[in-house]
Length: 355
Image (tube, rainbow, N blue to C red):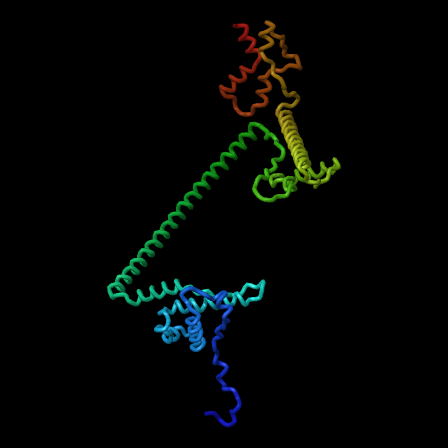
């Protein structure tokens, strides 16, 4: 019944009464595209009629399906036939150049899923208990595995810490050795030989700019960089030339030679400064005396057979013992005396006369 005032109006809940749009096919479409072995036209029409009547409620469709007139089929067979026809009709009726969205129903997967559900529901109590026991054992195994992994990580951390401590010790030892070798080099007066600039080799895979080859390495100090720029400006050479293969090679060699020259000049200045310092120290220790540059050897006396005459009044020649005695500041040791006697030319002449 309805109110008199509501006559001629739509039912308020009619908007929720949705129906499924089941496609309709023609005889020509069925003969060209929808024909399939095992399905007749009458059986397909009967299936689509039930689908329109019951809005794709497949359990109801399967219950009302005429299994006496037609072949007995399962729900998966009915669904597979229906969705196959729907997908074919969608592809046929789609406009050219457009790929429509098609729903694909996998009947084999649906059958396997129902078989697994059936096996799950038909388990015996013993099988359920066994499964629970296996699940508990699996949890225990996973817990043991996590504990082993945690212990392995802790052990790895300890090994890494020990390796890092050993590396720090070796670094300390290497730094000590470097300092000792540096002190020995400084005490012996040796000078590092300059080698210029060592440009890195760009041999890695991938794309790289040729101008990167002209980039100065980080080992070159700011003073050397400024000296290179100043020399290039004096020579009238561009600081960033066109990076061709030949220009890159020649430009790097030129800057390497500039740094080599800069290091040589610096080493020469250091040597001059040390020599001047030693001269001032000698003059402070022995005022009025000139340093002896070349000591007389016994080779000339042995070859000539006669020793040159030496007098105490000759200012040009001095005894080596005088110079050594003046320079030495500490007390003389027996070894020092032997060195002085060995350096004295008079003793060397006496030994040659005895022989």
